[in-house]
Length: 420
Image 1 (cartoon, rainbow, N blue to C red):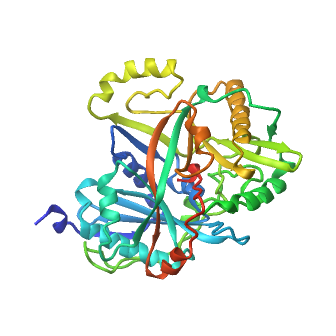
Image 2 (cartoon, one colour):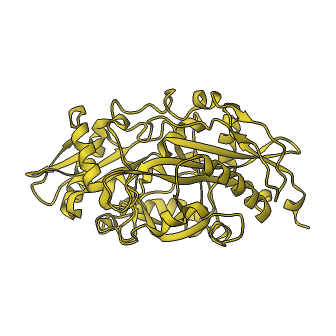
Image 3 (spheres, rainbow, N blue to C red):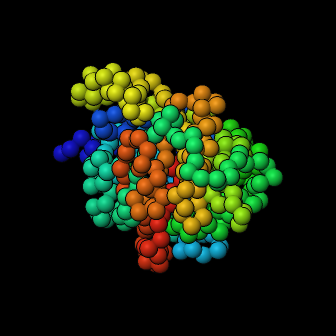
């Protein structure tokens, strides 16, 4: 009998008192690979979740033997454009799946998804998006197996994350394209632009003016933080043993406020304009105040050759490898939306952001992301970069089959890299 057969695990909605232990769990469960990365959410786990959705349910797994939190998963909801329609619909996002190694057996995973399905039934989303690194073979095999009790994971194509050095961004544009930093007076025009041009992409978020006004503060009570969770009233149930189907369910699930763009200032957005108005946008989104990428360590020979790798990387303007047990400075390339997918407009926006990085003396990492079939992808791929390949999955339970079947598979997906 395997080790997981003897484990007794309780699944329950997270409450404010779990916050510190959830952050500790993220530290203990880095992403696998030659570079062991963890996404830390300091100083508050729940506040950092605001960028993932306007409503977020956090499910945790607790070992009955010692009360430790040994696993976590989350489902979020936000308005997105589907099939080019003018009116947005609620789309879910599955994230933060972390389970300590001894608890990764199939029965425990199945029981966790049974509880997640209960949370799903209380929400509005019919389908969910998620991404899995192509190198994370165990997760792909476990989640896409189609085993009973799990939702269906439908492969929706590749997603490419470009790790760019800020030094690699251009500073000169191809032609006379006007670019400038956005100002508060531009908010309404930008929202209208995203609602028209963004809906050409599948799953483009339906941002509203309130997401930008003043730059959302992830520590404010309107975000999905401890203050919100403290108001929730979880219903306590019996412990859920692996393979069981009973669990605690929150009668008042915590919901996020308008924090989808937490930490993004209006002036962080670069805008390109032509005779027809706004031609494109792109932003550098600094989330280090509430979400940090941390290098836990390196596997194999990579740690040994790191100094030599960094020497060559600096000469080639590629990202360098940070010291083990250290965080690294980064910005997300966000709100990438270009009318008619003009590559010259995107290059002009990148040059504008490159000049800003020079002026602010920022030389860290710029993380850009796009679907493999995105027509703007060649612009990013042409710059010196390190590429991380993932797969996009559209996930649904039985009640989401019709919503999945109705998706126009010809539309290029858009996932905001700063919200993953």
